[in-house]
Length: 345
Image 1 (cartoon, rainbow, N blue to C red):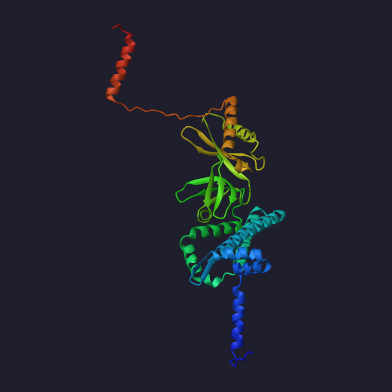
Image 2: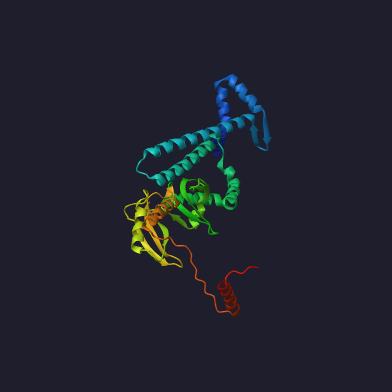
């Protein structure tokens, strides 16, 4: 016969103990008990796997626990990958977002899906998050020192996508602290770096943080129309009006140069050997290069100048020799020798 306790805290304490026991049966232990109750054969196999164990203090780690953890991690990875692909597919169907907004939304959804999958895995395994208090502090300290650049690049990439200063397909020129410039088209904006491909198919991975602190020249930020200059020099003796007309004709002959705004010719300077002009023309596809346009204009202008007799100048110098007694004697001797005619030796 049970004897009732006169202690008023006995029943609540027993209830709390029972609740704590039920909460503790989670994760690998809960799966094991469920499988044992369903099938004796499977239960024997699970108990056999659980018998290979290692006890460290109050912690019991068995082969069965390791298998369950591996399965849960695999499930987390599969769930996160499938969820990310599904979110990416849904974003593709949304046509109201531009390329930069879709990329930003895709990255944020990927981070959210992975975070949800990890939290579900921790909850499924029944891991007490308070046990990670010390570890999380050490991990946060490691992030502050060792992974500072990595998280800085991550935040910088998100900011760049949010303010839409750069986006895939833009043509940019980035200058580093040494003054070296990298010119190319953005192919991909990653978590850590931006992929920039040059005209010679060299791919540069520029950290996102560099795009935040260094000067960036974006050729297609608000408009894809870009003005380029082609310097040309002509002789001082030529017809300048005719030379200007031929320069405009050469610029209009190139297909990639726009008709509106039209090409213009500016007189730039009076050089040492030439009158210097600059052909100003506009293009809409800077990703296809600018050097090939400059080459096409100059080639066409070469033949036009030859047809119309416009002289292409080259450096010329006037030499002034000051009076010198020895030099005058040499000139006089040469003149006398030429006057006397050739002499036989």
